[in-house]
Length: 116
Image 1 (cartoon, helix red, strand yellow):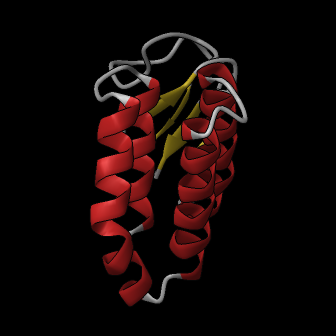
Image 2: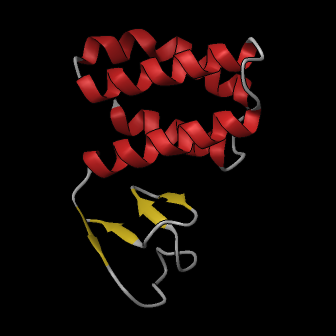
């Protein structure tokens, strides 16, 4: 479940889905996350849900929402996979130097990390 949540966050952060689509997906999959008994996935889903509510209520703007989701996904992503840091310009799985890549998720301004 954690990987599915991370993929949805990445889809939103990269503009593949709207904030409304992220919210719809989160609400429709919340029970599945709870049933999974995956404590990291449950924690992440709770954070996403709370942030979406605060965004909807105008407590913070979309930039803040994106920043928060990106920070959650980085922390959860690092704990969800084993990884190694590599140097160099990368290969076909790395789009540009400085991106974090884990399970095909990329995050700008992070060390190059390749999921193993």
